[in-house]
Amino acid sequence: MKRIAVLVSGGGTNLQALIDAQARGDIKNGVIAAVISSSPDAFALERAKRADIPGYVVARKDFADNQALSLALLDKLKALDIDLVVLAGFMYVLTEEFVHAFPNAILNVHPALIPAFCGEGFYGLHVHEKALAYGVKVSGATVHFVSEECDGGPVILQKAVNVREDDTPKTLQRRIMEEAEWQLLPKAVSLFCEDRLEVEGRIVHILPQKSE
Image 1 (tube, helix red, strand yellow):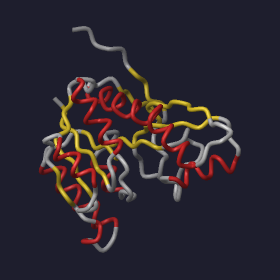
Image 2 (tube, helix red, strand yellow; image 1 turned 90 degrees about the vertical axis):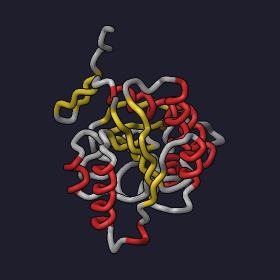
Image 3 (cartoon, helix red, strand yellow; image 1 turned 60 degrees about the vertical axis):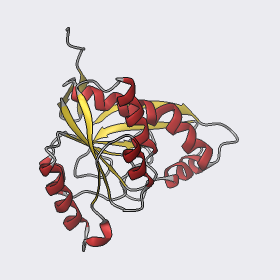
């Protein structure tokens, strides 16, 4: 059984999708062992508490820079014996040391079809503002492994969501969460925990389900 830590900074809607999936039995061979927040005020910690999942705070304000934050997070994850790190609305870019400590074992969900509308500065509503301003007819979400390059790791799963004529950044954000993010992230976590993801360069192969 793989131990999962979910890193959060805010409301925790993607965390809730993982909690709900775990309750349904949709995450095979894995358990959410910890929720770690960069903010003591994040509502995600309340979601963890309600689900009887241990919550921890490694507050960004307590550290001089992202490197110090990353090292503190690493210490906490190692102490908790974590196998998989999931970034679910975590607002800080992790350092090279962090990524190397969990090779192909950090997942992130991004609210666009990478490589479109991704990288530095593309987070939250900014992604959807840019997509609508560009005039795309389709957007969506991507779950990918985390690498040193922001939003640049190998793609695991993607799902397209149609853009409507009357969409605002907020309506598009909500629909992408409901129709894509909340479905893809638990599925990718389960695939990892089932040892069904094989990385070859930039390509992630999804292996067939093992027979019982």
